[in-house]
Image (cartoon, rainbow, N blue to C red; front, top):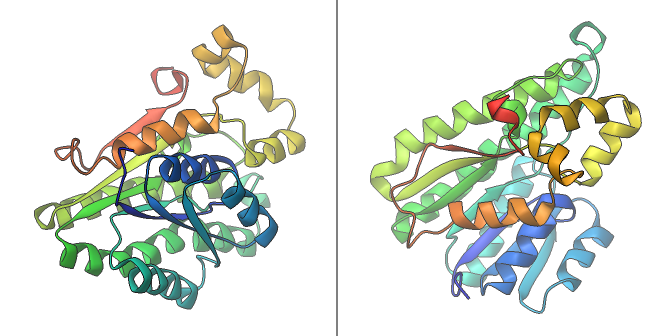
Length: 252
């Protein structure tokens, strides 16, 4: 119960990495609030743990939704210790084939949503003496792949956003770090490979550990890394870091 009495908000908590993290956090004693747009999927996350998870229907691209999810959490639990900005979408296509609407939608959710959630949470963390913010930057915030310039760019922005906040709020007791997953077995990756099945071989060759294990990463493996980054009591000196959990992709 290493997260006992901690309060965490996890965006995009209905599937994949967000879901696995919510279940792990609740199992470790945290009070967890997950947000997302699909109620059935959110309910399924809640059902996976005997711990305390509640869900809120919320779209992180909408400022009022971000405000209300943070206000609800603070009103109910009195604080927010951990924010995991996980909600994200991808868009495939070469730069000249990407519509302005698609580009804007990716940035609205991946970047602006993370900004608005942090903006709402930070004053409460300052008042409470500190906290931990973890942003999901993906390995594509550090590397790039062809045919996904909107997603690559949005995750690169998250890396710089993380560094900026780490500098701004370190003296307030708020640590800000990135998790940078490689190819992880999630619905997002399924959709990506359905649209571009030839990309599977590229990913396996790019990640040496995938070659050894004959699989992609598991959401639960990322969840444990996020738990590490969230450890307010024991990892207090770590901030502004991009933690790659990518099967060796970053070394390639």
